[in-house]
Every structure is written in structure tokens, then in C-alpha cells.
Image (cartoon, rainbow, N blue to C red; front, top):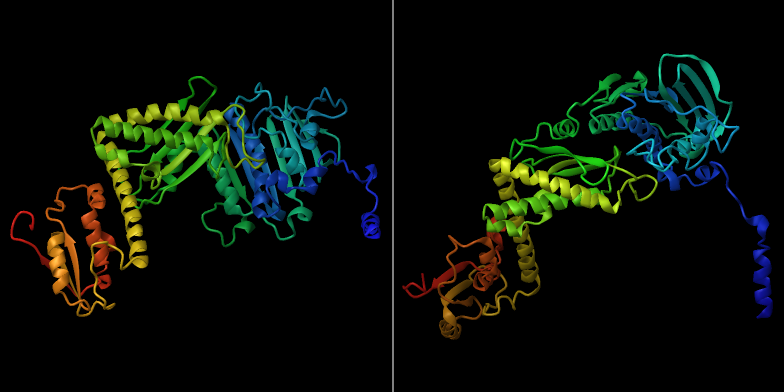
Length: 520
């Protein structure tokens, strides 16, 4: 036994300080790209464009840029240029032999978005975005136009291939980043999809009405692709309202009015923008963003928005004394709605580097407070639309309850045929042919009928008189009435849109009651 342990120890070999690797610079990104962009597939590769585009959008939202140029070229090369302030080109105080541009491009967690002094709100907030793009690109070029001078620097796989060089005088200002993803990371067959990149550019223009995006694409990349122009200037002065109109174009709405608006947060820097409508087909969606960064996995801003909508609609239901509004849940209201939501907040907290879910705790409170107030006023000022929306939500709630009830009935019918309902004296014949169900008034009549019946083909179901006036009763009362549920279960053919005559368990239904009020 001792020899066994000694052999295992020897087989493992020595483990000393020499075995400890220290990854420096951008090497961690190249070793583990999934930690920074979520993988090495085409979706992750497109995230490189998002990182660079986010930086240009931050300049635009901050008020320093108005134009962003996006060009998709051959050989999988992308260029993104803005007319913002341009990256700083002077030596960095901490790294005196490097320009600020080189520090930004080659050092993780470097940038001007940590303290909130340069940008009040920003999407590229981790200080790793453009350096990660640099690390995962086989070739990258940065051009800076600043103070009447143009500067350029080239990189490859995260390392500078030349110092920052003065290129000459210029009347432009801003930054250009041109890069080609590294095939050693993403594979030889990975290519940018023009439709995906064009959609990314359009969404940024929708999210900030103060920016114009100039799109261009090499004509050879567009063969067989529809809906993507070779060049276009993208600008949406109505922002999210234009975005919603485009996303729901051609779909009929339950009401013409669109709930949209923009509001600043009262006790904190930032704002929220939204647009919402209800299509007749009930196929809804919620596209949300934080600081122009898409958040497909949702987050606290969505939570606050949804809570505000539900609270507002229920309050409106109480205001007009519609008691049925109490059964409405959030899914009944927004499940079939088309919604766009965009928030701009300081120091947002995201789940993961790819920033797909917002987890800032204060975002829910900030959004809920301002949206609830605007929704209350909107409902009060659009009474006709408000009542339509409330009716739709109530119908959804009632349908949800019906489906739940029908599901329970179906399950019970399949598993407890002879036990449900309890008062049913069923016949022994399994097929419906030649069978009869006698519905009699009261337990006493039921007892007599059971003694006189033919057990093989005749079933008896005693029900009490004056069950319920179904003409004026609500769906809730119908579902809560045990006598009616017994009858539905005994017949087995379902109700309303679930009714199927072929599933009727008896060939004949015979009602035997007294000719009085109870029997009627």
C-alpha cells in the first residue's frame, strides 16, 4: 500500500514556482477570449464591432460627435470612424514612454470612463473593449485626428508594430479604428454578416436621435443578401418611436395611440426613453438597451418598466371602477405588446463582460418611478385607448384562467374517469354508442334513478336545482361552481374553443327535472 502512494506521487511530478505562469498585457485575452467576448464563434466575432461602435456612440451621446461611419470591406475588414474629440495622443503620466492611444489599445482596464468626469453615461465602461478588439485582431490601425494633426499607429495581435506617427495636417477630428479579426482565434471560415452589421448600425441610430450613421459595404459582400444597401445615411429624428414603427410595420394595432416618451431621472443623472404599442396578433417583444448597449437578457431596467405598466393599468382600473382589472397580471398586459426601452445611467452594472443583462439595483426604482407617472397621465389623457388596452389585458387574463382550468379538467378526465365527478354513477360500457346520461334533480332523485337504471348503458348524474344563471355570471363564477364543473367533467367534451363533440362520453343526454323554478 505504501508503494502505491509513492508511485502516484512520483507519477505526478514536481510542482514548483516554475510552473506558475503570469500572463501579462493582452495575452490573457488571446488565451481565454470567451471570458471577454463570450466565445470564438461568429456571434462573438461580431461583438468586436459592437465594442468599437459603443465607444463612438459614447462620444455622440456625450455631445462631442454627430457622425459615425461604418464600412464593411472585403477580406473581413471593418472600419469605424467618428467625428468626436479623438483619442488623447500625449504621453500617459504613468507610462511616460507610451502615448495615451497606445495605453488604451494595449492595456486592459484603461480608459476615460471610470470616474464619470469625461462621460456622464457610457456603454464601453469596463475599459477592456477596444484593447480586446486589438488583442483578437490580426491587424488593427488607429487614426486620430486632433488639433489639426493626424496621427496613425498599427498593431497586430495586441502588440504595437510601430510607434504613434504624425501623418500630417488635417481639418477633420475624431478617431478611426480599422481591424481584421484573427483567423487563429475565430477560424478561417468566420466572416462578418453584412445584414447583422447593418442591423447593429441602424439600432444605434434609433437609440440616439442626435447621431447620423453613414453606412457602406463592399458590393461583392452583398450578393444574395436582400435589404442591405451598398451605402446609406441612417438617421431617425424620432428615436425609439421610429424604431417601433419600423419593427411593427404592416401589423394592425388594437389602438392607434403609441405610449412613448423621454424622462430624466429626478434624483440622479440619466434618463429613460420608451415606445410601446399593442398589435392585434398578440405577438409581442421587448427590446431593451442601456447606454445604447443591447441587453437581450433583460435586467433591472426591464423589471422597473414592467412594474410601472402593471401598477399604472391596475390603478386606472380602480379609477374607472372596473373590478375585473384585479385579475390582470403583468404577462396579461405586456405579453402581447411590442416595447422598446432605452436607459442612460451613470456607472451601470452588467452581468459579464458582454453586457447582455443589466443588474444595477437602482435602475428598477429609477425607471419605475418616472414611467409610472407618465403612464398614469397617458391613460387618463387617452381614455378610449386606455379602455381598449384594459379590455385586452382582462381578456388575456380570462383566457389564461380558462386554459389553466381546461388543463386541469383534461388531466382529471384522463386520470380519474370513474372518480370525477364524485356523484356520477357511470355506466360500465366504455364506448359512447348506445349509452345515456340522465341528469336528475337532487340526490334523492339520483338515488331512485340509480336503482332503476341499466348499469351497462345508463349513467346518472344528480345536480341540485337553480345551479347558476350563466347568462349574467362572470367567468370566475362559472369556474368556481362545482355543479357546473361536475357536468363538464361528466360530459368530457370540453367547453368554448376547446369543445369537441367527438369527445362526448355519451350518445344521449337526458335532463329529468321538475317543471318548476328549481328545475328550470
